[in-house]
Image (cartoon, rainbow, N blue to C red):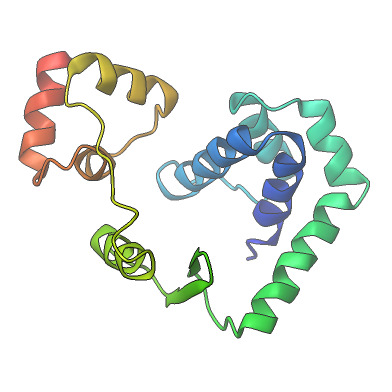
Length: 169
């Protein structure tokens, strides 16, 4: 019924470790969308925090003492000040330029916006297309979807992903 618990949990994770918080957010999304887990439940969020390598006691402390909720309310206030009316909304910033994107966006849209606001100074870097790198990527993100691999490695089609992954299986 609400995504607030997941957002508050993400803020708790950010207070501990930003890199692990990003993995935690990824894991929340995958658990919600691909595994139909009830990620608004604290026990599920705690399990995902643990699986993401976060210090569970620190995570629960930020959830219990209200600091994560305060941080979340700060984000909500920023969204309101920026005129955010729906989710997802992305604020892409570079130096003094910013563009707000509303709704779900294709990867190419982000590339175009980043290219525009950076005057071509920022360009996407694709990882090397080799088995070792893919296996490392999959180990770090065990819930990867084929479409994510296709985008990350700029493969152009899901058939190419299937061929590559099938060979490794």
